[in-house]
Amino acid sequence: MNLAKISVIVSGAKGRMGREVVAAVRAETDLTLVAECDLGDDLAGTIRDTQAQVVVDFTRPESAASNTEAILRAGARPVVGTTGFQPEDIQRLTKLAKSLDLGGLIAPNFAIGAVLLMKFAAEAARYFPAVEVIEMHHDQKLDAPSGTALKTVELIRKVQVKEFRAHPQEKETVPGSRGGRYLGVPVHSVRLPGYVASEEVLFGGPGQVLSLRHDALSRTSFMPGVILAVRKVVTLKSLHHGLETIMDA
Ligand SMILES: NC(=O)c1ccc[n+]([C@@H]2O[C@H](COP(=O)([O-])OP(=O)(O)OC[C@H]3O[C@@H](n4cnc5c(N)ncnc54)[C@H](O)[C@@H]3O)[C@@H](O)[C@H]2O)c1
Image (cartoon, rainbow, N blue to C red; front, side, top):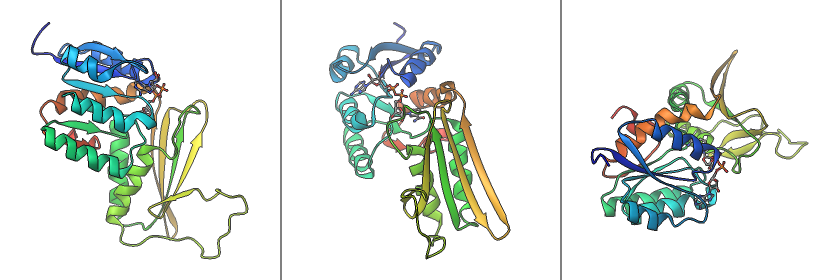
């Protein structure tokens, strides 16, 4: 084995994203895939046995936080694309990574175009107080709304001083038709076969609508971001949240 290579385990290797990551890691000459783990495998034991430096995790929302903790405690750096983290999970894991002096990344979206969409949405939010988010995913997605939609709203609300409300007497004749509200922003989730991952952020103002949209048309769209993160986390000393926090550094 070439010692200069970064050793990588893929967790969730049998899944849709995991299979893409396995192929993407294999295609890079400076990375070496030391193991593929999935449900039922001993991830912590495999990390210890292989001395893997990085674990890329694309599993299930219910195991996102526990897998990240297991990766850190076993001494590897997590690159986590699994969605479903609660803000308190991120806080706890950030503290844990710091105490262990380990870098890592949790990113709700590894597609560079989606990260740019979030950045542009935060910029537009300074000028347009009225906003709604629509996210569209394949019909096998387990969580709603998407991690990207939640992160987009968080970034928007960081720059918006006031929550926008439509007509005060608005009534839903069909429950849920106005979407779910996150930090006061309506979020609409579409689940249909055919989509991979899309998001549209709609800003309304007097006489105009600004619509920002990103479409991930295949899972390969996430791979440049994942590979960038694998290379980057070995140089980091803390757990980052969001691809944008490491893209330009
Ligand atoms: N961050 C991003 O850019 C991005 C992009 C696409 C999907 N996702 C997220 O990635 C996750 C996986 O998506 P998918 O479409 O590949 O799902 P999937 O169901 O196709 O694959 C999940 C895999 O993980 C395995 N698994 C389940 N629990 C496990 C555990 N505790 N330990 C190890 N393996 C386990 C399953 O057996 C399966 O093989 C989801 O949370 C999804 O929302 C994130």
